[in-house]
Image 1: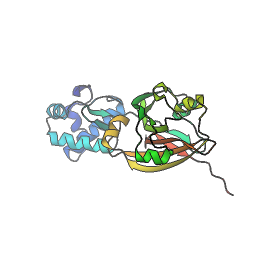
Image 2 (image 1 turned 30 degrees about the vertical axis):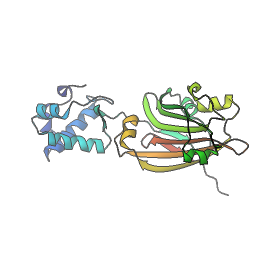
Image 3 (image 1 turned 180 degrees about the vertical axis):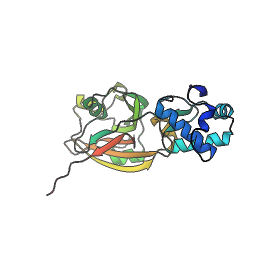
Length: 251
């Protein structure tokens, strides 16, 4: 955790222009971020420490921090504290090709990894039964992952596949599509729906963004050449990290 004196001096509040004290503190914190005295990923000291050091009230500190969280310059992690947001470079993804996250990032020269949130065989939900066309008594393989590129969390991805096609989900370590291809059940086409929604609190902790930030919710249904559904994936992407691009032609 960065000490207050490393990025803020009491006189900074007087040098930050006119206006309410919380605005001056907000400007002083912004200056510390822009100058590099506070770097992406740095933990902010507790609000009581900031208040004592600057000889201001905790209410004033809270208002300044709240505004920077709202702007996306700081992010609160439930039970961990407040951190400086990491700058994100937007990733462009084509909507015309069916590829995996691993393939997308590899083409951009980004190193990828995943943190498993869920992996195994489960009794399907009614939704999975219908969407995947599962028989009575059938099982579903679920793969829930936090997708990370160059140490930046980009997406929460939850895939459901019939156990007929993926009976051993514990053996999927990197690319789901590579695992399906190895079983000769790789999808050949997909329908993808994209909608905007806000990031909920438990999702914000995983994606390292503020709760209420803009996110992109994506539902993908993938098909085999026979027309049978092989994959149902629902993902939530950081709105500040992704641009989806489609090439359109006339006629």
